[in-house]
Image (cartoon, rainbow, N blue to C red; front, side):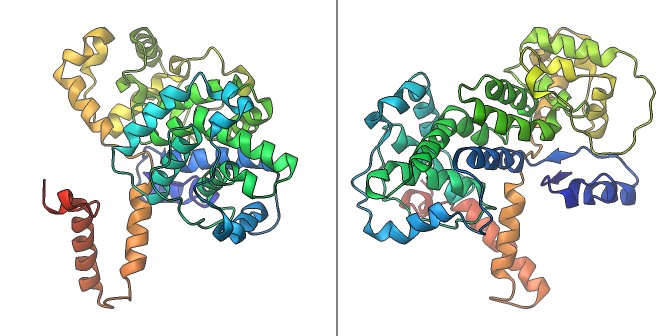
Length: 380
């Protein structure tokens, strides 16, 4: 079951997820949208750096949008123009630029994802190959927009009046984005990597040089460690980034007899003290209940009886890994579906049967022609 981590979905008494389980009479895997979780952390970072506001829109960005037409887009400053910024990103700059190029070679689900990559590349000194997009929505609910705006405002800071705190805060946000946020966001859809990626992100936040940012994001994300729960940590068994020794420890923990306590049917989340996350591995979160994932996804588990080094050679492991790879841990596809139905409903036809047919036709067309390039249309 895939969902955003809003209280209406995850409430422990009348949340939609628990109500669905009760109606179905079965317990499901709770696959929270990892993008939504990260957006919560991003919001905490923005507030820590720039401050909070009771206004429905971010005042700083509203000012920038009003001045956008007077901005000379050819005159921008990247990180190379600031010794302070370069000292904070020099150790990751080349690696992040390579990652950005890899992501730009792939089709992105949304235009703002691609814009984020292009802006980050420009910030790192990789150049901007297309005109900057006109500033988009600026209300508080769009956390990625805050990072996109932060890049834009910072690179054009010589043409836009900022307070000392605003400039410093935007710089810190941009540095955080390229050091930690980009890779975490764009690798979020990888189901098998989810448990270990979340743990490594928490460790990185605990060790982050800017303690204000590290604590703000870490404290927020510590409340949403869904994929380190005993129900989902088993996904890490299929993550190639997890060492064999750690996987062996996970299997040992899963073999320990359960205590027999009854499930209270609350949505499971790992409880981790942010200050003590350093030194932990995914094996520390595995229990006998972690075998549930094999039952709920109908996965073969015979490979658990042999050493992890031998798993890749076994057909049952490859079959299980293929199923895990198909699991959705972000709900971008659902959001696109909702947007599509809202766009088509009532604008072309009011007939429900024709509407469903129209949606299928549009979806099929988008799959065949993901962009408007000649080579795509020509089928080359």
